[in-house]
Image (cartoon, rainbow, N blue to C red):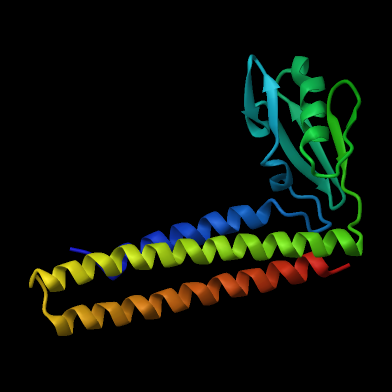
Length: 183
């Protein structure tokens, strides 16, 4: 039996995924999540950076990458440079320091466009969740498993839920946009 609760769970998953995506966008502050997309060529395969090193931020404009195994230090440095994040890591033989340069106006606007694209993908995920449950509901009504009135009530609840999650996405986008545009 399709439920509004199922849709809510799917929409919550879409919101969580969007939060993770937003965390990877630079705001001028150093956060370990900035390097979440970096893949390191180590031990014969491409691995996420967090599986070969710890990343922490001792100050707002610096990330420090401490490898578990010093033999992959050069590979980590190369992966950060080639990750197209606009970062220039410095390797001192034990750790890698990654200074986070301040964002210029042009780069901030690019990030805002990326954020809007991510938010739209989040809205699409929410709509997919709505459509899946709505289609199941309509099938149940056609097969007379639930009454038309009950089906309509559930669809209205589903629409309300979809609107609520779209507003949450808009609020997240607005907040992150302000964060990126702040100097």
